[in-house]
Amino acid sequence: MKLLALGAPAALVSLLTLSMVTSNAPQVGYTDTPQLPGQEWKVHDAHRPPPPVVKPAEGANLGAPPPADALVLFGGKDASAWTAGGKECPWTIAGGAMEVNGGGSIETREHFGDMQLHLEWASPAKAESTSQGRGNSGVFLMGRYEIQILDSFENPTYSDGSAAALYGQFPPLVNVCRGPGEWQSYDIFFRAPRFDGDKLVAPALVTVLHNGVLVHNNQAFLGATRHRDLASYAAHAPTGPIGLQDHGNPVRFRNIWVRKL
Image (cartoon, rainbow, N blue to C red; front, side, top):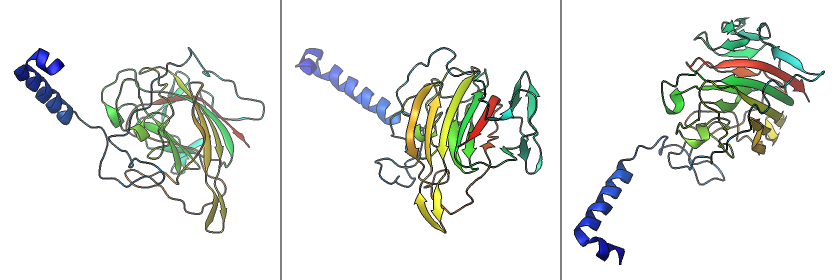
């Protein structure tokens, strides 16, 4: 009925135009990657729906003071808890934050297993790129299980690579990313995987709050993080370093503390 009311020529033009726009719309992600086990999606699937956007409460979890039994990994001035290839942390320290500067990824000198981790991060205030090129970094638990850091504020990318994703495995339940340059918080509760010799007995589990909002609830990692490939487990020591990634973007970090559980 609506097609007749519009007139056949106009309707056909509209439908053809819509078809062309849809087919030519850019897809952010991949279609040639492996299928994720137990999911209908592939790794970094271009067609996976983005997490719904939720606005976080103002200032949620920012400036959270470390509990009495916490180890402060960075309090604003001293980066001695961190190393890059056995050398001193090369990142720039200014204004109570340390900033990625091209000196390479860093990791803690001390190693951890089960833990509660709090950290605050901010992407560059000037958004100069898109997708994975915008405010990209990551926090690696035990040096191998990554929770993505990315400016996901009005920045489409593949869903399992968005802010707070278990990179290449599970997107966050919701997108609560603040705007470029704004401080954000991660509160991470991690249970290390258990091995019996070379056999995996229990996978790594993680619960994550992003800006005070639950985005992963006791989610199991599929294995150590990989790009464009399936994650997998290989037996390793019961503890490992916490890593922060240098992905070429000047992401800043502050107020980092950890509790051994």
